[in-house]
Image (cartoon, rainbow, N blue to C red; front, side):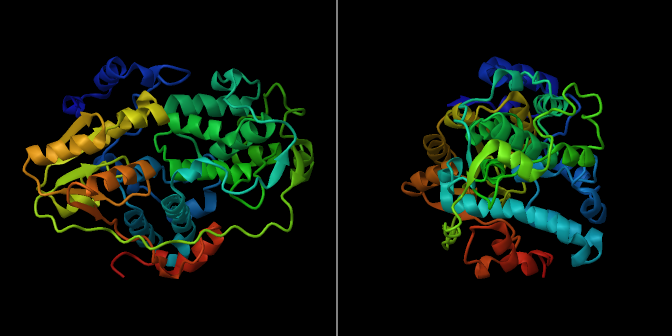
Length: 432
């Protein structure tokens, strides 16, 4: 066990220095040592300030444009500083009617949908869920090419997206889709390699949303692969990249969808393939009756507003930085800085480095706690740790405020089918 609580609350510059000395691998590699000094701050105050600026009507009108009125809330949602239900409630109040908030709420719905899919599939979100919707002409490359990671491809748009990803840990959704589509379909990179690369850098890095979105682009969890062309890029980026690009007129994405598909794909998925079905299973929270638990904060509940922390406001709190997670996801230092800034908001929290189950058992015993409370999560690693703990100590899995009513959901195979079953409930405020 390595105590790291002294890192919480340090100014960003000092925190970066400490993390790089303690975990040098977080800053080793292209773009991994970049931390924007003026970038978004982790924590509840910064999240609420951003939440106060959202405009659901402007969002619906302009969200597809890189300069549009997007919310920018994703990093705080990913870490549980804001819940989907809380953002939905503010959106409904701001919009004045469910109809005016529908587009923003449905986009929140994608995040809930990805979480539900990960809850069912676990680590399988890292493998092809379906036979690819189209067969690629050439074998897959197993790693992000060096010229891509160095932002030296010669395509102005791609190099700009890579530079922005490395420098800020943030990309507009369209920029993510364009970069993923080009990398998978035109450079021939396996989607898993691209998804893992994104996960290293994105402040909102989350295998549910990230890997399943890459599968959607790749056509391994969608009806067809996502391809973009120069017209689409220029329309939604206001021509920011194409005008002076050295390969304008003969770049990879010149042409209409069918023309591009003819270049990169050999054949479509057989028409007779049955539609994908993912049957949801009931997974009620196992809520042990705890009077003074140890509250275990995780990657998606790194906040005093975690349901477990909110239910037990006087309980001690622990976040364990897991070396196995560091080795698997390889988070860049900017990701860890945002996470630790979120945790600095939590009263009486301890930050430890080590294997979570034995550390949590030991701290619960040392502090005289009668069990461990943790927020519900779709994360398979956290679920495995929770199952291990539940075998030796009382464990309570505390649910989040409900975003929608899942009782009518019979199939998670496509977002449209899921949204059709939950939209009415998702467009009602929590107190309704």
